[in-house]
Length: 353
Ligand code: NAD
Ligand code: TYD
Image (tube, rainbow, N blue to C red; front, side):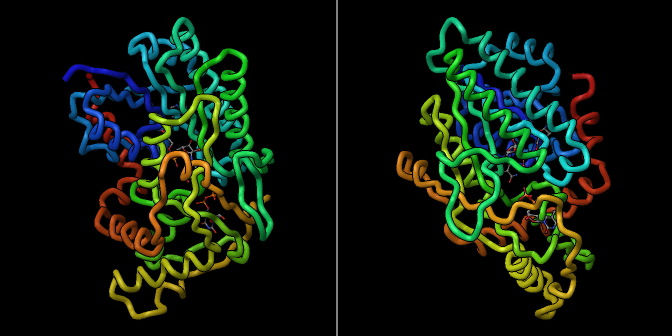
């Protein structure tokens, strides 16, 4: 099939990126999808084995912080669109080693902006640079209210500060150079293929193995959870219909205290593992809180819903149950991630190519 559009997806071997890559490769056979990923500890090509042989898919092992590689990539493919997901994404890691977050999330984003600007500067028609960001840039909420697109930025962790900086650079390129760019800020995602350093896959894996489930502080912190496929659907819509210069908030309208979420997960795990009720809850262990732990995130996605008709999965328990089933049916994936064996997959599949 003739290629109508070449699209760069950065970070496509990660959690959300792999869902976005799969969706675009399958749904848009006339697009050439180039997945550019450094394959850090969070990048796993085993997430994409089902589509890796498709004609409209190419993988490029690239560090976005390396300006020359990024420039060469744009020269090679003359992209029409960019969906930028590559990032260091874990708050706890950003607390112990913030430098990587500055290098990838800020410098890496600026390298991509420069390359896109250089490639598109004579003709911005039908081009779009779509930057995927987080609700964490808005800081923390008290008991009331939700983040809207007008909420002022107030990041409080090195992760959220690095994402906020990259958002500012994207907006600066729109206003200063006219680069057609848009941003979406999303709440916490959950679903298959999430690296087990994040709360939900970590808890599923520990419960399965009868290990303590660490809950920070008193478990009172609140997050707004969104199924990863709902995020991926919103990205698809915004890539095609979002307006340059605009920001869109994406959320699940689904707020849960960590402790209540973990208790629900324990009940689901008891059912799935055919354990007597209450067995998994005994594994809950309260541990020292994360420094600067944001109390509450909640997203108002009215703008996205009103303008595009997008809406999230209504039933969180069903989404969580589907997620649990995926992890229990894919124990090989989890074992490879934990042992680090997935890192050998690249060598096996791509060496000599
Ligand atoms: P992830 O950590 O699972 O994946 C990140 C991917 O980026 C990995 O494949 C990694 O190899 C790649 N990467 C890291 N540094 C790179 C570099 N220097 N060059 C090229 N590739 C690099 O992250 P995720 O949870 O899938 O998040 C994806 C994006 O969505 C991030 O930008 C994140 O800030 C944003 N986001 C995530 C959530 C969430 O709940 N996970 C919510 C809102 C927004
Ligand atoms: P996480 O999945 O790291 O996402 P984020 O920090 O980006 O929101 O954490 C979700 C919530 O769960 C957050 O309030 C921190 C808390 N948490 C725990 O209580 N225990 C854990 O082991 C982890 C990883 C997180």
